[in-house]
Amino acid sequence: MKRLLAPALAIAALTSLHAQSPGERAVDWNRLRPEILERYRDLVKLDTTAGSETLAVDYLKKVLEGEGIPTRTFALDPKRANLVARLKGNGSKRPLLILAHTDVVGVQREKWPVDPFGAVMKDGYIWGRGSKDDKPVLAANLVTMLMLKRLHVPLDRDVIFLAESAEEADTTGVGINFMVREHFPEIDAEFAMTEGGGATIEGGSVKQVNIGTAEKLPARVRLVATGTAGHGSAPRLDNSLIHLAAAVEKVGRWETPMRLNDTTRAYFEKLAAAGPPEQAARYKALLNPASAAGAQQYLRQHSPAEYSMLRTSVVPTMLKAGVGPNVIPSEAEATIDVRALPDEDLDRFFAEMAKVIADPAVKVVPLPRIRPASPASRIDTEMYRAMEQAAKSVYPGAMVLPSMSTGASDQAQLRAKGIQSYGVGPASTESDATDYPAHGDVERLAESSLYPFVQYVWNVVTAVAARK
Ligand SMILES: [Zn+2]
Image 1 (cartoon, rainbow, N blue to C red):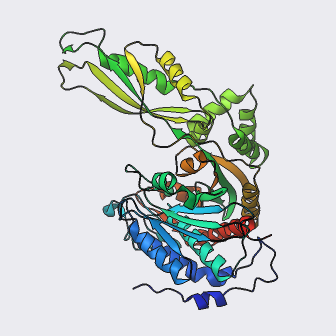
Image 2 (image 1 turned 60 degrees about the vertical axis):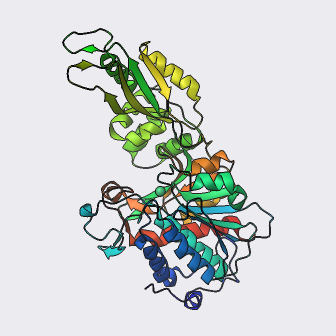
Image 3 (image 1 turned 120 degrees about the horizontal axis):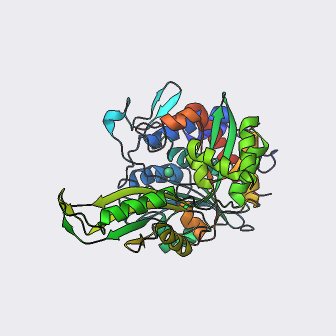
């Protein structure tokens, strides 16, 4: 049995808005906390592992419609529905889309010290699958919609709420691919905001806020080596395994060229201009062609994700060959996880890879791509500036910088359709991000990170969509 706060109570918790300027609409955040926590925990308690996302849609529909916000559901698979709700603006600006995925990755229950779907509160954390990925964003978006409605905030643009299924693995195309392909007018917007950013806590306060503005494109290939099959007792020069092994070593050690874009240049420049001197010096060295090589090697050893931000990366991940210990296989193959910079010319890149391998017995075979190539979102938009401003006001003293994810997300589909899309996320310490990461054995979020994050989302939405 769910115990929801009555809307009237929550409204009473708010200060009057009449004197507030747009974008600075004051909500009594202290008094809203119990409701934020309850909504968030309700969502974490739903086991929305791939294939059961409709559980979240049913919950969201009830909450939104209970407060007079109409919803529509779109389902290619009835168990994996998507939900859209729209608050209308006066149409003077194009819509803002706030979205979050409802699915979570699976759990190995024996690894959890608590029920992974209990939203247990312990040691200052809320524990549960999805507690980081992606229920904080889902909860923040939900609370933002409820507050816009309760406070009758006049809007210059529609605010569209999307809860989408199947972000983690959309092999059947029921989530963002379905929405973009079949129902794009329902979610078409000038700007979008969703997971894909974050913030770092150090020494008890937020030191850095990353706004996600770009992501790399997974563009995997197979290396296929062929030779003559034969008996293991008779060595052959054209043994496919030997050719494959040499090719894997060459691409695995290949130093692809470093290339910065607007996002990564701004990111590294900001780090070079601030922060501890030793660290700043390293980023300065990276930006200077004369010293970049050494700085890159440092990142390669100590910060693989930042090293990956500099280039299209090439990582061997799988090998497949052989049928028996005494059989020379006629074919051997490796899978290479290539993560391309947003502007990479992939045909040229794969031709370059073939040159690096320099072996006619080994072919480079691109695998089908699961996401479209997507240009980086601009960092000179009203939305980006509003996010910077909101981050500075919610996390005073933090450095705010654009960032390119080395992973992939549903923002790719939105950016490919021309939407300027930006990533957000709650703050976490470095150690918590390492020990309890999204998709990790155990996931948890500090309760103290939840409330400022909701406030951040609210500030951005009101700054960009509320009537000026
Ligand atoms: Zn996610």
